[in-house]
Length: 138
Length: 138
Length: 138
Image (cartoon, rainbow over all chains, first blue to last red; front, side, top):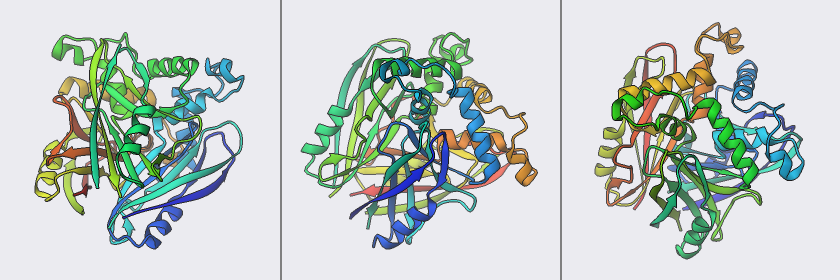
């Protein structure tokens, strides 16, 4: 069986890192499926999905590491296309990836004890996002 | 049900970034499945799959960002193994990842309006690639 | 059908890169499923899963590239939270990702000839890990 749902999140942008584990956990529990795989997907090109130990200091470390790879104050070629300033947002999204998959067993996600599912909004302004949650299983 | 197909792509290498969305979209529409998850996989160690807003300036930005992380002109240890020059290709592939998953609903991929599925050929020569598309659903 | 299994791995930490392809291949062959998708998941926030050509020189190159992005000797804010030294481990895990998906056809993974599935233990000490393997298919 396949169950799909949309979750709305209001973000602040600028690498706003949000813990979406409760939404994912609840979705699986009410899906009616016992075992399978959950896919979490961001339909957009300036967000990313992954996991981390969700605590404020590590979020700062992640932001700093991303500055090395895709500095937010750099002049990107992309800015010439749309006259905007979110080139770094796109690069971060492509490298982290907009998609994440995790098995669930007996209605529970197989996450570690200190592991949360995060949505990162890399855009340079607040955004209203609609993430896709999909469970495939039985 | 599980439907699998191979798609051939001729690339130029050197971080050739290709939009494979039309292939993916068509595959889902003719799969006979209505809802499920599409997995796109590159069977090789010098390519990557992700999403981006597919436009020429941003492709240049992506290439530049990858140069910071895995410079194409660096002397890699890997070159000693095979006497080749594609160490950076391998590193980029491992970090971007060779696999991508996206839910589809009512025969349509849940991509954003400005989001395309890309295959990046990081190898240092033209390649004939065979990507795997697989839909699992109902 | 959905088949799930746990695989135990003893690692040395410090970006210990392990080839888990034989475990994945065997799991699929004995799963009873012919076609579908294999998800490999690390339930923890300091490990990553991807693919590479598994050879010693390239492993050294990967470690060096990761030092640019997330230096192991940097003073991370995360260290203030738990008084530990594995900030770089967390950043590497979030960016590589803890999850990997690959289609299988006729009981065989669709990996390339020079492509292995790797588990990277980025933690700064030896760890006993339990990876989740899950096949969804028919």
